[in-house]
Structures are given as structure tokens and as C-alpha cells.
Length: 115
Length: 111
Image (cartoon, rainbow over all chains, first blue to last red; front, top):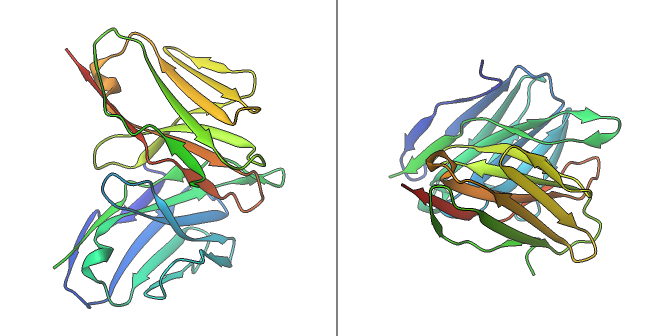
């Protein structure tokens, strides 16, 4: 049974056309993350939520925004996609147990193509 | 200096071979260590956590040397299905759960 679900799995958009990627989880984890991964590179953390608290990485462009309306769902909005934003976008979740964050569980990713 | 450094490979080995991957991390405050496996165009999946005493899971053995800030993964009796990219991952252990990924080491096992 899928525990971290991402939709869509493949997304094609046009240069400058806003796009929203979604992530949902059945694990009831309180921490959710969005990563960008380009070919042959390590996943790059864009931001994460600790419950409703939003934590942005310093080098994440303003073009990337996120929303977390409830524990189960998290969205990544790319306001004006550029060709350089074509990548795999990975959502991950993690439980916080005993005051510490444990390992992360990844969704299958959304592969974004920008034309 | 990058937070986590790995030899990118590629490593090409025959079935049945033993192969070892190395990884170094730069921050001595790091507290948790993992190896993830990532198949082509798929998401990373946790292979194993790495403990100070070293740990083994079937054909896979992970070692941690905190003094040298060095992590290793040994795969014995390689299978075709082991072909993947292996990511070394480090967590500083803060409540924010920030993971730092290496670029990954690519392994191809051939028949």
C-alpha cells in the first residue's frame, strides 16, 4: 500500500505557466519535505514543514512556494517554471519521535518537463 | 567543501563480486547515517541505517568511523538486482531532521 503518494507522476508544462504538484501521506507523519533532483545529482531540499511551521532553505528561489493545508497533504507551487526547473520533485515524510527526527520516506516523485 | 562526498563511480562488477562504497562527511556534529538506494528514475529508498558498532543486513554491511568521519557500504555476492545508485545520507540529528545527501555511487552488476 502506497504510504506517500505524489500526483501527477509526470507533469508537462509550458515555460512560465504555473504548475502545482501534490503529495499526500497515510503515515500521519508531522514532518513533510520537498526535494528537487536533477539528473545525476543529489536530491536538493527546497523546504520542509514541521507540523504547520514552514522552513525555507536559504537558496530556494522565490518561484517555489508551498502549502500544507493539513497533516496529510502538501503542495508545491511553481509560479513561473523555467527550463532549469525541469527535474524530479520528491516529497518525503518523517516522524518525530522522542524529540528527534528519524529517517525519511519518499514518494515516487513527479517528473516535471518544461517546454 | 560539500557536506557529504562520495565516489560517483560507476562501478561495474560481475555477479557474485564483492564491492565497497565509501563516503565522507564534513560536519562532526552529524549523528545519524544512512544508505539509500535509488533505481533509475525512481525515488530513493532506505537501504539501511548505519550504527557506530557496524551493522549487517544479509549481504550488506555498513560501517561508521566517527573519528575519520567515514562511512562505508559493503555488498557481498552481488546480484543483478543490486544495480542502482547508492546514496550516502547524513543527519545532524537536530529536531529539524535535515538530511544531507551525497551525489550517489552508481553500481552496475553484469551477468
